[in-house]
Length: 162
Image (cartoon, rainbow, N blue to C red; front, side, top):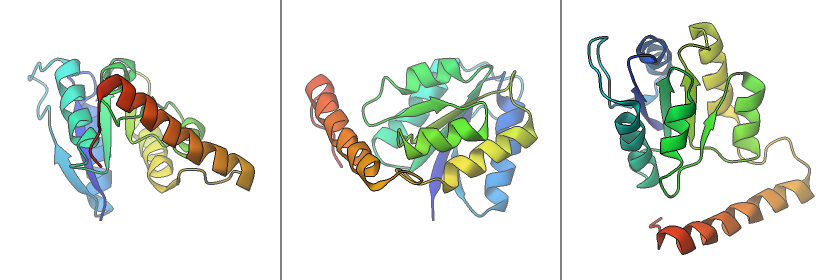
């Protein structure tokens, strides 16, 4: 059973709640780090950092973040070792973020994405496997690239526990 950490700021709250309900209906376990109402004013960077930390520490398999554009959350999440956050505004981007980049955090924009679009994006992101849809030489190159990226992360951040 997949476990996803979920978070939003006030601009992403409504979209987060719609996606959260969809995930719960699919039987996916959720760790909702907030916000939990419209009045809460937790800065996006705190929420993004909390979700990214859980993904990077492998407490959860994936993370999902929602702010106004998705971009601020992605910037902060990507500062954490082992986190590959992608802003996705459509299903094609979600598919490529998984099949090419092995993203483990999806960020969405509450200003940009409707709940219906978000659900389609999330479903694509959840069901696409790393390297799927690519010919064998490309698959091998992508897999090797993740090993190279891990080496870069270790050089930059130190040892990352698996």
